[in-house]
Length: 235
Image 1 (cartoon, rainbow, N blue to C red):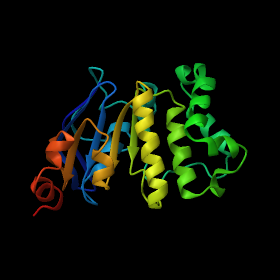
Image 2: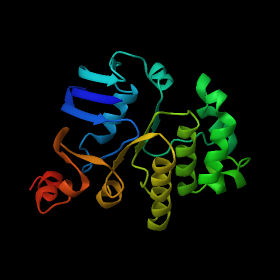
Image 3: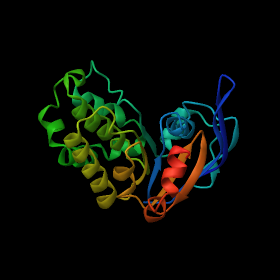
Image 4: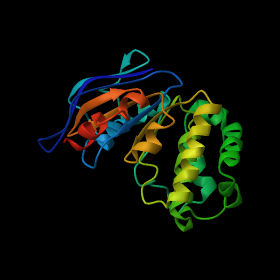
């Protein structure tokens, strides 16, 4: 489904990603972990098109979308739930969800998807008329994920969904992410600093360090012995 080959992305002359290759198959759960500044969020922005990579290929169902506009990539079925949630604070919960349903496919499936999201996150239904800016951090994260699901995606990219959340709320968020993967045909690409939570439910994982893939493999492979410690911490 998604195949990234030899991707290079720079900010102001500084190399953020160097020769990064990542693959996500249909209905697969792939995790990307690594320390702060490793290039995880840059990779997501390069995939969604909000940051322009300058070398390599981003193949979506066999088509190279590297030069495609971000708005056009969203139409293909790529949903990006950004770091920091970024909900529309002056809009209601329902209006935020409605914003996510902009493609023809999403419009057609809007009622079904809304029902699914309310089943995953009942608090969003209870607070559908409440302004998003008045929600707690955990509720805003639920809303951001719901907004991504409203686009009827084939791939849901989740960037640091645990950021700034209490452990109990984080546990709920990860339970719902696993439920989404289990009960739908949506592939998930997860960026997360919390290694255990990220790797536990995934099928395959990558470790980024200093903008490069330091290690990749199954969850068992990545957590075995000192290999992860060396790749993750660089020691």
